[in-house]
Image (cartoon, rainbow, N blue to C red; front, side, top):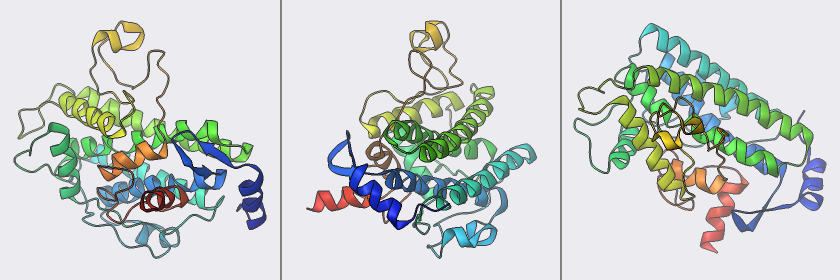
Length: 299
């Protein structure tokens, strides 16, 4: 059931929470439930197009609400098994969007840039130099899985960070349920890549493992809040219980999930500051949190 205006007013007046990552912004459950719609849209369109060659405008146009079509989206050249997995992910993301928008009003799909150039820029930044030939996420299954490695994990750390800030039990239940499936997607992607971790990502003389390590290092750098991301191989001292270097799942010293704030997430998906749109969101993310950050910077 939608949270109606009276409920929103109640949250705004009596459940206003100062968030630790920005003392200038007070947020409600409504804000915290709407913010992840940005990433759910991103995942849904990337997975839908990658598996089928079309997106929400075909599968569930009512959820897109007339938002602009994504830039550079296309079908990926996937093997049968990977296509099946990605198509399942895609449909799960459609369900996530519907679940959120049946609870809060939400917003139309924002402009997304999921072109090969957008992903290539992420990879160039990760390696701190241009890759040649240009990385193409849609070229084959390995490339697509590496591109997929970039997205769900960011969302799940955001859900982990949001849960302690939520006030209503219905909000907590929804976010916990979303987190469970997002974590599962990330685990599947990491497992598929872990199985291939020593393989070279042709035509580059770089292994799958090194790609994941570089991507994780970049996200740590952009997030700017310490280590909250780990590739498929870590020093043994950083592995589970300090006994393994294999790192099929990322976690802290107690193997608990890392958390991120909306600001950290925006820095990662924008590829820069949280107040400067870019990267996967050329015109910025939507929702009150993202807009307030920009407005605060201007003010």
